[in-house]
Length: 286
Image 1 (cartoon, rainbow, N blue to C red):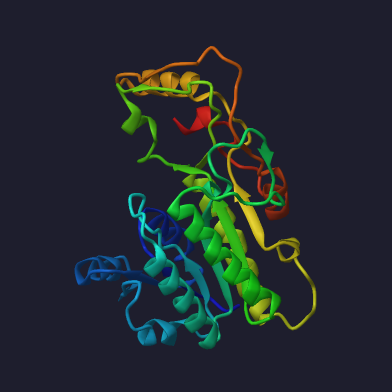
Image 2 (image 1 turned 60 degrees about the vertical axis):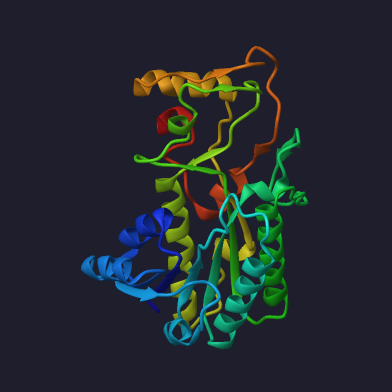
């Protein structure tokens, strides 16, 4: 089994993933500072200093035959993302030229926009509204074009809102007065995300060294949704979450109205991955 895993962008998600994969894979993790690279080394992983837009030579030396998890967010408040997008596309092209085995791109369900009022499966067209969402769509399309040209194996993973034992959106909503309490929520727990990524990484590693032509279920699609299977109204959910955490609850208008807003349908993706999410109900994420 080819067991080299390069996590490009070793932030909150990357750390959970690196810790989960360290028993089976040689982990190379990129960070923007020498101090953080040393902290990664202290975890018995290899830290590599790299910022998007930098020379890619040292990074590409690690990518030969590796699985690359591309997890560099553009920043929520950045509205001028041409440089970010172009640098990401250049990085991808460099990785392909270096003979990377597979690219797993961490994308977002925000590519569907925020004004839709329907159930969205993996086959629904994107309608990006923000600069970040538009950048993600452009990067996704570039990867899919490379896949079509048989230059690289690609998986795109669109994440709903991330939660975890040390991260929950109610913490930033506490005590606030907000609108649209009847809007449905789309959340996913970090442990379910790591389980999904682990499945894709292990499939990629096994495929790279396989001497037969067997095709796994994960080879049947390039695109995955990762989201909980239940979608309560946010006014009800975040009030309950705040009460459970013992922090001031937010107040919402329209909470008594019928539910509205998009629902990310991830059932097909979980089935393909062979995973029953441990946090299918957002109540269990609190």
